[in-house]
Length: 245
Image 1 (cartoon, rainbow, N blue to C red):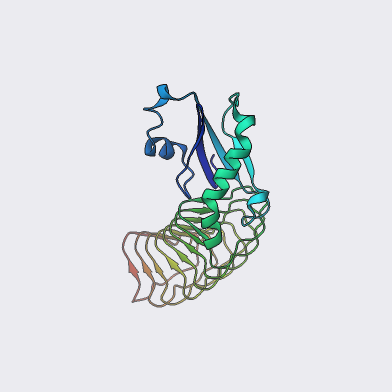
Image 2: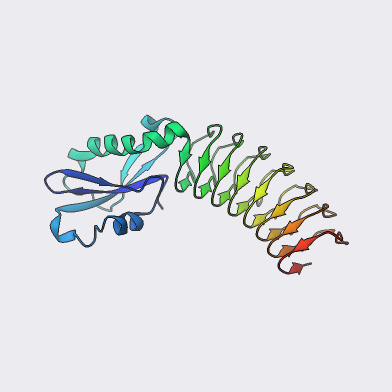
């Protein structure tokens, strides 16, 4: 699995680095730069990953890994140049706290994220040591908090895709939460939902302690009320899909 930043290093007489800022897909990089089509023209290719270890904002703490079972002969001689080039490419994103693509921190030792962070794609914090989210966090894609110790969501949190809170310690949702996709609250300790909550996709409340739905709840997809104590539905409830009880 690719973490945070990846790329392809091509070496013939000089070193070339191919990356898509913020993306973590080797296949997208290959397609973008037609590397497969030019295979006969180059000496050798190595895929690499640039992974954070303890601090997302400190590039000196990142480790550079050759994503091959066997490193090419030239890798050790060019490793410092690869690190230098990938650092230069990413510095502007880091300074602006805007990651254009996915940010995959799964299983890393990172403990905190910077305030006002924006992630254009998905943000995966599964099994990290992060205990709280920064203020004004914006995620254009999916936000996965499964397996984290996070206990509350920040005000002004915006998630364009799915928000997975399953089996977290979160007890309430902020009043101005915006979720464009699926909201999964299964296995959480949440007992009530804020009024005027608008979920663009489905809403999963299965197994929660919620006893009644709030005013003006809008769910674009399916609403799962399985194994809850909810007995009545409010008159102003809007559900675009099916209701499962």
